[in-house]
Amino acid sequence: MSAAPRRTRRRTYGLLSAAAGLATAAALTSALPADAHESHHHRPGRYQDVQLLSFNDLHGNLEPPSGSSGRVTELQPDGTTKTIDAGGVEYLATHLRQARKGHPYSITAAGGDMVGASPLLSGLFHDEPTVEALNKLDLDVTSVGNHEFDEGARELGRLQNGGCHPTEGCYTDKRFKGADFPYLAANVLNDKTRKPILDPYWVWKKNGVKIGFIGVTLEGTPGIVSADGVKGLTFKDEAETINKYAKVLQRQGVQSIVALIHEGGFPASGSYNYDCDSPGAGAGLSGPIVDIAKNVTPAVDALVTGHTHTAYVCTVPDPSGRPRMVTSAASFGRLYTDTTLTYDRRTGDIVRTAVKSANRVVTRDVPKAPDMTDLIGRWNTLAAPIGNRAIGYISADVNNTGTESPMGDLIADAQLAYGRELDPRTSLALMNPGGVRAGLTYAAKGAEGDGVVTYAEGFTVQPFANTVNLQDFTGAQLVQALKEQVSGPNAAAPKILQPSANLTYTLDLTKSGADRVVTDSIRLNGAPLDPAATYRVATNSFLAGGGDGFPTLGQGTGDLVGKDDLTALEKYLTANSSATNPIAPPKADRITVVQ
Image (cartoon, rainbow, N blue to C red):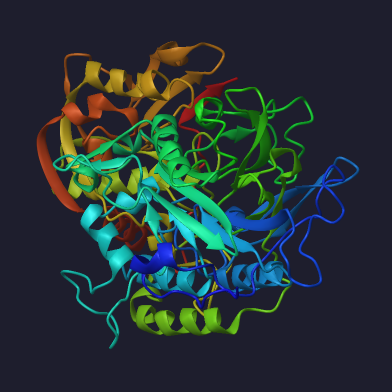
């Protein structure tokens, strides 16, 4: 049976095979019979290698990401490390197409956050360019991630099914056709129907080979997405949901199952190619995905994960104690994972002991894919009049790294200044670190010149269109909010708010929980906070809703809603920098960290 042509609408998925020209990875282990593969007479053998190419957290990065966002760290044989420039959809397309060559059985899958928090080239057009690019990449299936809900379930449905934007209309003379691949949302239920808002699973079929995919996002999505984006939705436990649909697939005769999970872990090394299992199976990985993996039914053969933007290829024992592959390909299209699933036609299952996997770098030393170059050029032409406008000048890179980052500080200063425009009583500003998506680079990206900050670069830093909100808090509430950085939901993975220049304190990481914020050290304009006094605080709308595990910030009073946060940054840069007097990166010395 020959492979069917690439399908064009999601409704026909169950009836169609995968596209032609796809693939297998590494050779089988010696434990399998030598004559197990398809014979020269094209009669299927018992065992068939299926190539699974996967990536996650693209976030609309069609052009090569800049700075540290566009590099990966590679461990060398002598133990040293080197960095490699990576990413860009023109190169990702070439790498994936080269990887598929000579492999008739291949699937390309993703672990969520394909869109959202995107650079201007995609974000300005509500991520239609990214969906178009993913269609051209021949993506077969993806789970939803938390960022797929940034603009709500209705907009996610539009990305899946097509149609022009409800308020901005069509961007080109063609109607947006939506994704050729299914978004899977098994654990996201509509509160009224109690059913998944999108398909919970999808089955890939070719020549009798059947592999099922179940897609989930992290159960904690409502805590990290604006409340409007998840209104009317319930997010269920990841492992319980996967186990439920694994049984459904098995009843349909599908024994080979891959889970696409938008939740991840933290590897023991920052190098993409480190040996995760060298200290023992699963010992090189920590974080939420470990417990999920240990509770997902042994019926699932591999886990493709995401969310943490880290790179790992690990085995974690399943509930029966058998090792199972868990992978993540960092973020922004810098890596893809190449996994070999050996399918046993007799049992319909994957031979788990033969699974091989490795992360591959999306290097920029390969030819650019011409269709992607054309796509980027077309959308850039539409974006250029907005994106190329200069909004400020910097004297050096403003990095987005560290517990307290120069970029986070700059944003907090901008929000304090804007807050004081709205209300002169504004006392301070706090910025959540996850809302700072990139730094600013001194080197020019185009023809604007070194040190020039363009609107497009600012958009890449702050793409969410959160508003700047002013609220009143008591001094006691402010202390409590600062303690929430390192306690409650944030105890295991602290979320350190980026403070405006007039707020200083000590963070003692040798202590545990809320005690890590040294209360006596907190100073505003050099003076201790008065627990009973009222302070006007500028935050973004996400934090003002109690997002990121800061319930106290959702309890403010006297709300005043301003313009979007990028407007605040633009106003600050324009007022405080010029070509002859650029602004210097903040020193990031507002928080004294004791380790």
